[in-house]
Image 1 (tube, rainbow, N blue to C red):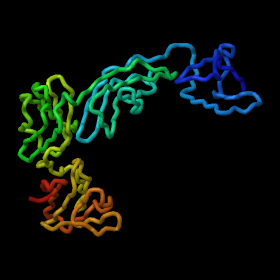
Image 2: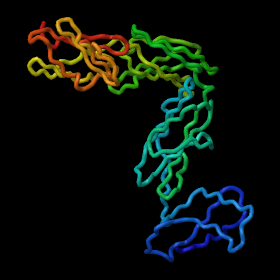
Image 3: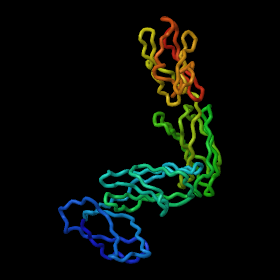
Image 4: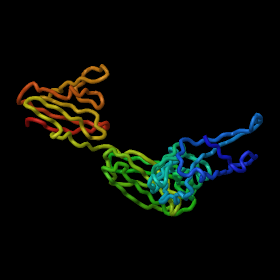
Length: 330
């Protein structure tokens, strides 16, 4: 073990300070472990305290990352106290972690290009994002500010089965025109609609929105002020039928694949109008349908009673929508 003294250490300090040691005399040797020893000879140390913030081994080259790019507040949801951030992520050999601050308060860190803050209750401030390099060095901060006093307040939204979405809010004092934008959160069914209303308005109704049960984000912005939002779910009046191709038929034996619809609940199989029975997990009784998450795999293979009977599949989602598919017969 080699001990290298830190010049200037052992003195009383206020706040954080940095001390370095030159290891060039040991060039070419391998470092197996790195540690810190606090010692005062044979005498005990009374009232001595060391707060170690970081211990790093550096090669003398500047590895400080550049400031992060494209920092954005993607969702600021005052009603639920949530904040979503995004930025452009650099390669791991250049950045090992991104640290997020509200003004000078540390919120957390991760190696990612998104960050979520729960119970975010601040009404104004500056979000700072710092990239941390492989040697622990920190980049200049990227920043983005927000001020809820410039935004529509107390936003609420409700979607109805007729394809309308009604939004209400408290208009800000600026009186600037308010832009509303609703977009689907399901990338499989992209949808976006944007409208602008006078700055004194406190409600509006959007028409022609989806009725497929997808989640949505409604954002509101007065002029160039802070964008706030509220999340919800579109009304659900639609369902896609169970595809006949999802059934493997071998003679009179039918093997049913589980539906791929995200919100399916039950799949009822009728033979000449009579529901087939399916055993379930957890010791429950058999059910007259395949039920999501409960029907056993073995039970999904069924031998029909007749060779020419009519077989029908009825798919139902959690909203109660149903669709019928004839699998055999007329």
